[in-house]
Length: 484
Image 1: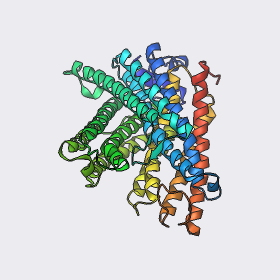
Image 2: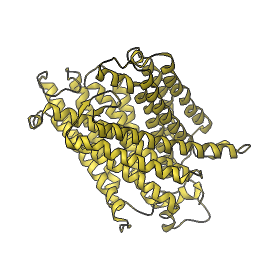
Image 3: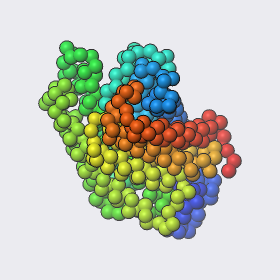
Image 4: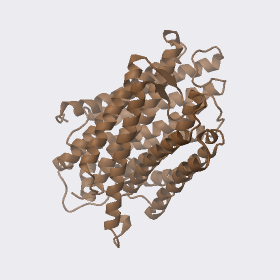
């Protein structure tokens, strides 16, 4: 089945009409068994791993959020808070995102008719699964010392370090396998129209390149690092560049989901696709520059000279903002908008969180809780895009969410919860709320109200995350299609 027919089939299941009527209309059954068995098993494996990481992230998010909520914080200790916060960020901001990228590489390769090496993909999934399990051990045993590095916090424990190496190796292998398939297809299209491939294919190729550069940058930083530095400071310097470059993976993945949503849920084409391809390719020089900086400066120098931050966010802002505007214009092409589609709902809320989080990163941005308010918007935008796409991925694997009603309202519940977290943290930051700090000795009355708003938003986000996990997890485990 080609990409056009595939898109029409899935659109019909989600209650959307295709952009152009076709002579033959796929049946509902055609919409649910369209992926070959080998690819389907791989996709389900990556989805299962990503969902498991989200469960772990959500559990520790609950502990960390309640530990910062005034009415219940006395039930927790400072040590438990820091361990929970480190584990939450690790699994939500690293493991969940990169393992879902594994699912995206499988899906987009199938959608674009790329041939991936099955042995490499299965090996990658095995390594990432083993590594994720090992990384969770110290968190659940409440052992090891947490280090709250920006972008990639770690727990100093042998299981955590071994797991991190395995996850990095597995994801690098899957990213490289996708790049090989993409390059082979590009070479075979000599003289053919390049615009024939879906835009998400290029987006995920850039995500794969960014992941390989991020891992390579961490290894280069390890070689060039001054090991006489204090351990905690050395860890910050080690992961600074690689953690920044990983943001290109997440933004490219999110944008790729936006492209799928516009094609499937809206049935529209992106405007100016040539401009879009130029914008996506423009990410590559910024990624390369951030990695190459480690050949010139030592890691501890780059930690303090702001070069990596300027290059990374300059590149992401230059590209992501016009891509967002193009995506919004395309999403508005259909009237009325398909708000009942989980794919469209996840994308629309993702748009909103990305825009609001971006504004919060500019207005009053200082080193207090306004920093996590900003990045919860960015992280939430990626997460909502991935959550909205997941029912479609289940569909092409021959399964459906446990409840289609839950699938429709879950993105809104999770998004409203995140907005509460962001608003509460940004408000509290304006009253001096420090980051990564346990206790409320610093707080005035408005700050306490703001942090309780953050706690209320956390409850809603937890409920939205729980709804997603149950709705997607049950059909993954049951191995049968639920009845409509």
